[in-house]
Image 1 (cartoon, each protein chain N blue to C red):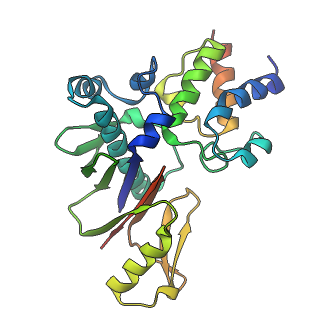
Image 2 (cartoon, rainbow over the protein chains, first blue to last red):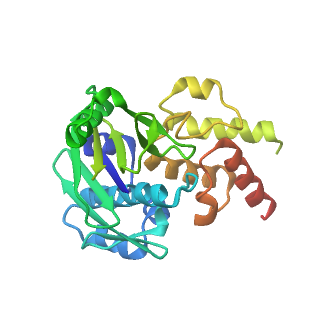
Image 3 (cartoon, one colour):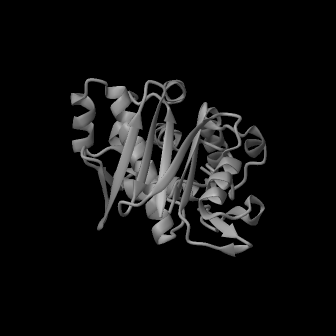
Amino acid sequence: MIGNDIVDLQFASYQSNWQRKGWLQKIFTTAEQQHIHNSENPNRMVWKLWSMKEATYKVHQSYLSHAPRYNPLDFHCSLNGNVYIHNHIYGVKTETTKEYVHSVAMQYDVNYDSKIMQKGEDLKLRLKQTLAEKVDINISNITIEKDKNRIPRIYIDKKETNIGISLTHHGEYSAFVIEY
Amino acid sequence: MNKEELLSKLKTIISPYVQNQKGLNNLSEDTDFIKDLEINSANLVDVVLDVEDEFDIEIDNDSMEKMLTVKASITVIEEKLAAK
């Protein structure tokens, strides 16, 4: 199981005002708010921690197969890249550029492929191409379908597989991860 | 406040964050904020804060967790109004 989340920083600054009264308190723990306030770049820290929580939410939801919830405050980020949710720990790798923040969350240190793409490119097609090459099958045998909790699952020859994938898009960017 | 008034106020609150206008035109109790209206998950907290301001209620984390659909949001608002 794997999860990922991308934040387009320019789009985020237009879409969200995290300095709004009460905003940070609804999403971040007191410790996380301290990290934000002590950071040299509070804006980037807000979106880094947010993407860590979102990526972890996706892998955790995929693992427990639960209905969608909006509980960012339950996910506790540590600056070494671990995210804690109830009794579970996930490891998160975050890449930050001037343009975007991209986080990949996983249960164990697994091998994965990840690709960040611009808006307009076919994310699902690229994911299928990547997977087809890796497992050496024809791309037409692969389908992606969302389950009842809207978690994307990979089907090969119409049979559900346990290949972990995650898709994300925001503003000008989209990204996927595939776990092997 | 009856359900129609509540629904109408909620519609006004969510409108600025909706990225799929078609979903807003077809708004019903079953409307899902993310799936049907394409509200960005980071904006859901704005919806929660706007609901708090509009109805003068406080929405705790356990209630916020449920506020992903029109129906669940109305239930939360009604509960909090009744507890005032």
